[in-house]
Image (tube, rainbow, N blue to C red; front, side, top):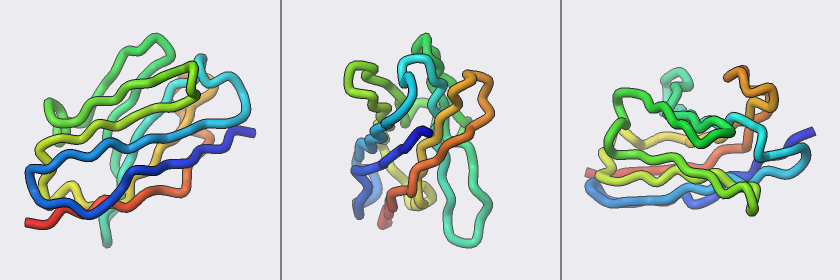
Length: 118
């Protein structure tokens, strides 16, 4: 069983930066593909980006060039560095893990709120 706990959300003004963290427990973190997703009020959950066990990353077009995902396997932690935040980035952000590394995310955190004011 993998448990994921996000932190780092908050209330910021447009143009600001935030770094979200997601700490994993259980299993072998270094072998997992990890993903970040978000859900805005009244909208479906959407993909933000992913990082493979190898460190390779892939991002949604809406955040490409502004958001960066990284991981520290020694700390069982994945990060989402967000810069140039926009009001449309306001959402609950979730991390998820794919232990099989096949981008099927089996485990999810509880989410952390990010609010960007204009």
